[in-house]
Length: 266
Ligand code: SIN
Ligand code: MN
Image: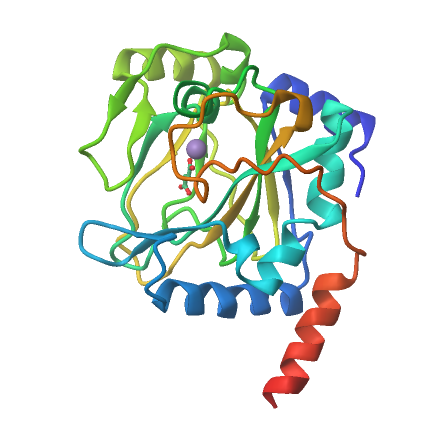
C-alpha cells in the first residue's frame, strides 16, 4: 500500500496520518482472538498493570503466526518504507491492551526519546505504525497526539519509573502546554482495522480506560536498517537486535490465514 503525495505532505506537516479501515473485519477478528489468548498466557513478554490486568504484550511477531504475518504486512511496511526510502527492521512490537476498567495512563512522551536514550538509536529514522484491534472511541482511552510537535526535535525528558508499570521518558507539563498551544490535541478514533502512522518525535499519550470497552492497538515500531540501535540496555524482546530487513508477505496472507484458522476451528 502506497501513500499519495498529498498524504505524504500531510504526514510531513502534521506528524501523523490516519487511514480508516485498512484491514477487514475478518482479519481483525482473528488478531483480537489471538491477542486475548496471548494476554491470558504467563509469558514474560506480557507486561501487566499494577493490578495484574494486561498492559502490553511484546514481540508477538516472534511467537504468534497471525502477528508474524501482520509484522510483515505490505499495508504497514510499504508506507513507512516509502517515507524513509530505505528497508526496515522491527525495532519493537507491542499489542497494547488498555483493558476495560483497568487500562492505565501513558504519560506524554516522544517515542524517539526512549529509543535514543535507552537503545542507542542514532537518528529518528524510525516510527510507529499502528492498527486498531478494537474500536477506538473518544471514551476508552484513545491515543492523543499533539499535531506538528515532531518539528521540535527531541525534547528534554525525565525518566518516570513510578507512575505506571512501564518506565518512560516523559515530558513536563509546561512543555506539553506550550506545544498544545501551538498544535492542539487530536485523538483519532475509528473502527477496528484502522491504521495510524506517526513520527518518532510526535508527542503523544493516552488517559486511563474506566469504560467496559477494551481498546487494543498493535504498534509496529519500524526502524531503517542503517539506523539500527547501537547500545541496547533493554531485553531483546523489548528492543530487538535482529536487524534483518523485513520482506513483506502477500497482501492476502492474513486473510488466508484467518480463513484457514476459522475452518480449522469449526
Ligand atoms: C505508546 O505510546 O507506546 C502507547 C500509548 C497507548 O497505547 O495508548
Ligand atoms: Mn509511545
